[in-house]
Image 1 (cartoon, one colour):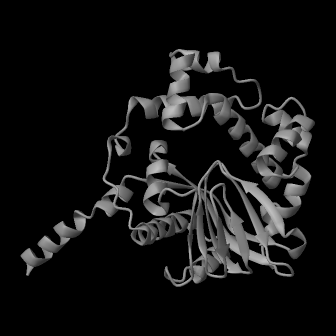
Image 2: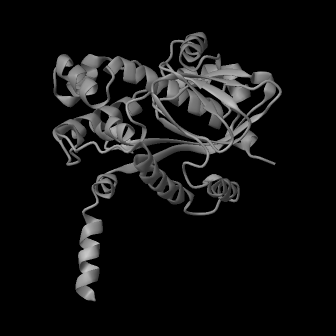
Image 3: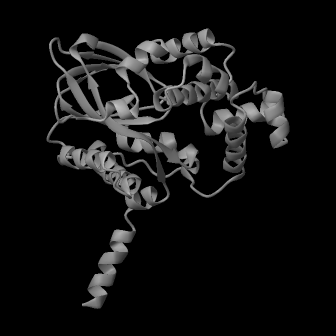
Length: 301
C-alpha cells in the first residue's frame, strides 16, 4: 500500500507545470471591483503590471494592439503590462468586473509566465464555461477586504496559483524550460534589485543614468543592457513608468493634489505630470480619478 502511494506522490511531484509555478511568487499590487457607468462607454487604460479581470455584469469589446475580444459576464481576461488597451461598453449598460493587478518574481520570468498562461498574444480572454466559476470566490474576497479580514493577500495569491494552473491547461502551453527560464539567483537579478531600490528611493528628484550606473559599479552601456535583458525596458523608460505609477497610486490612495504628487514623484510641475499621465493612461489625472476613485470611494454599498 505504501509503495503504491509513494509511486503516486513521486509521479505528482514530477509535474513540470507545478514545479515551474513553485519557483514563482506573486506580488499583489491591487485588488477590487471596478464599475464603468454608461456615460463612459469608451475608455483607454494602461498598466505597468499584469492585470486579471473577471466580468460580472455588462458587455464590452476589448481592443488590444493586435486584435479585439468580446467580453461577456463570466469572461476572464489576462492583460500584459505596458500595453494601451481600449474598452468599449454596450450603450445603456453598466460594466462591473473584479480585477487583480499583480507582478511576478523573479522579474525575468514574467514573459515566460505570460507565454505559458496566455500564449504569444497581447492578451488572453476566456469565455464563460471554459473555467470553473470564480465569481463567488472573487465576491467573497471583496467582502473580506471590506471587513479587513486577516490573510486576504495570501488568499488572493492562492487563487492566482489556481487560476494559473487552469489557464496553462487551457492554452495547452507545453513550452520546455529554457536557459532564460532559470530561477536560480543570479548576478543580473541582484544588480536589478539594487537598481530598483535606488530608483524607488530617489523618485522625488532627478535620476541620472550616470549616477545609477556609478551606484551599481557598472558602465552606462552595461546598465542599459541589464535593464533591456531583465526588465525589457531601457532605464529611462522604466524610471518614467515608475514615476507615473507612483503618482497614480498617490493620487488614488492619499487624496493629494496633482502638484503634490508631481513634486513627490520627480516631475517638473503639475502640468508636466498631467501631460505624461494623459499620454500613458489616456486621460488627464482629474478625469482618470473620476473613473477610478480612491479605495474608500470605490467600496461597494
